[in-house]
Amino acid sequence: EAYDLDAFKAALNGIRVHDDAKYREARSRDYFWYSPILNEQLKDKLGDLIVVPDSVEEVMQVASLIARHRIPLTLRGGGTGNYGQCVPLEGGVIMDLTRLNRVIEVTEGHVRVEAGARISRLDDAARETGQELLMYPSTRQMATIGGFIAGGSGGIGSLRHGMLRDPGNVTYAKVITVESEPKVIELRDGDIQKVQHAYGTNGIVVELGLALTPATDWIHTAALFDGYDTALRFAIDAQEGGLDCYLLTAVERRFAPYYKKFGDLFPADRDAIFAMVAPDEMDRFTREAGARGGKVSFAMTKSGISDAGLQPAYECGWNHTTLQALKADKSWTYLQVAYPRPFDSKLVIQQMQRYGDEIYWHHEMARMDGEIQVFALPLVTYRGKTAMYELIAELEAIDGCTIYDPHVVTIEDGGMKEIDDSQIAFKKRADPYGLMNPGKTRGWSADMARRDDTTFQQGEKA
Ligand code: FAD
Image 1 (cartoon, protein in one colour):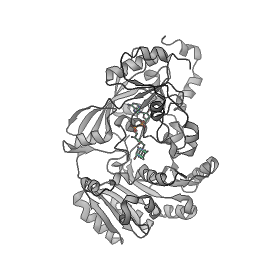
Image 2: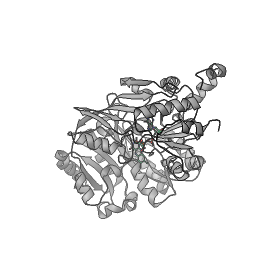
Image 3: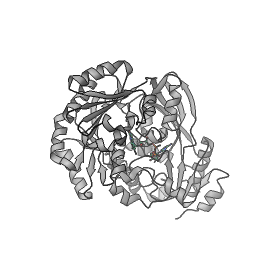
Image 4: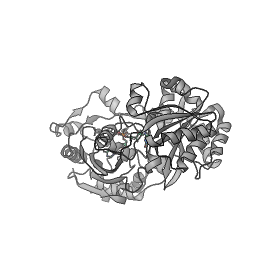
């Protein structure tokens, strides 16, 4: 450690901190353990101190001290990321943003909110005005809106409103720089991409503006089919036909034992479509499922679901499906697959035949660039790193799928595939000392290597 943590702590001036080992351990982890590869790499990483600011002013004080003392800084929201995004690779300070949680203002079609607000609270606040969020991850309960923007990509609602990064979904982001005199930078429109999915490597997002849409009291439902191919084709037809829903997830029958709460509502001899359907579309949903031999097994409003002791439909898809299985059997891991467009369900059936018991499948309907985009987050039997990368290569070469590798820590090796120069350029402004979430962007290391070390060192003095 080259930094003086005690001096940093002493200068904090009453800002809330935690330094006991148990607390630090809990706040140094996320859901990286889904990946045995990441688990090996990250399980012992530990932050030195957890700082919990209460206000933007406190965030700025911490940012200033971090810069003066040159301490690595990792931001943390709900800590529900899957790739160790908020695991401190080089120790240092973890800034927990969950107390920065005010919903500032809800107006027609828009909400302003502090970045540490839990998504469930934010969506509930919007609902009180007859509106709702365009999308949220299945971790709605725990995740923060800042963590979603900085670490997520889309999820429930994406089949109706596209991916998080699509124009208009996020309207602005207020960012604090990590310098001895921190600046406030407001990003709007296309400029928001500079911090979007940047893993908190280039500025502290303290406030966000998000578009809202009129609320729907979604019906949480499942339809059961005799055949996964049939279920998938129903889902695609429903989407092509414009059926108004917020979630449409196909889950094959081998998952049924993991959906314990559902019992006969998801039996082991049927493949399921879990959905959130607009109330006035429910008849059509039932009729179109029926036309393919499908049967609706339950249909309830959200309050009905909790009265019945079931999980909401949004916890039956995306990475919550993986979680259900992992809770029962830790030998599974998973992959993230994007299918070539237009989607052909035959490809899935070929994959199911090719991999047999090695892989269990579920598929998510979304919309990307206005077109139907199908994703899968299949459960994969872990047979070591080499086998995992052989499988990834196969899915890409044979099936033309794109894999967003969930077994790596950098932005570029995961979803983004390439270095985003505009994010790196913004990092030079927002984090000139490279203190933020070190090790998470290859773009920065490459840039550092190119730079003349001496000019860099001559920057601001502590
Ligand atoms: P964290 O994990 O705390 O942080 C995520 C990243 O953002 C970190 O790099 C962190 O440093 C950075 N960060 C946090 N706050 C800020 C800030 N204020 N400013 C700048 N950077 C910040 N993701 C999806 O996109 N869609 C899904 O459907 C989905 N489903 C999931 C299901 C399960 C069961 C699990 C475990 C994960 C899922 N995820 C999904 C991943 C994750 O839950 C979401 O992306 C979530 O929105 C992350 O929010 P968080 O507050 O937990 O972020």
